[in-house]
Length: 173
Image: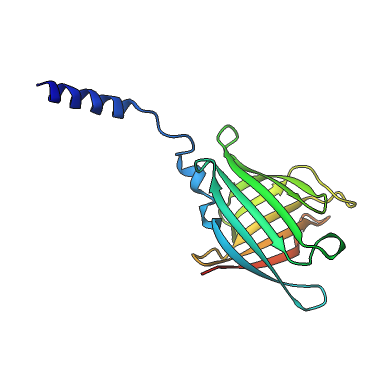
């Protein structure tokens, strides 16, 4: 009898437990990006550029953390290094990302999944930066299990977008 009472109490306590933070499906919308990736891109001189990007789900699955590295692509011939933290903001029902790098750049981006476009996910900077005060966005397209294409684009005067940098991702085996 005592064991039955204990089991009933334990079942009631478990049923009343709140869901863990960041358990909603929206927090999984960027999981396609999680992994260790080898990147290729075309340099302006036509040569092939390479980089790596390690994307992890951190802080109990509440944040997506990016660690980007391009050997020799940074200031004074050193490596170009950057990091971002992305989180789903339940209050605004959108994703937010803060990017910083060793070149002194920072971007505050917002967005999320898109429908009816060639790309499936986009983040747009909320404060134009740089000498031209350009509005920039990043988009993910052709997303598959082991590959995707990422585009960094600038908004043109006519409202269209043009590529500034296109990275071809391949998941590291």
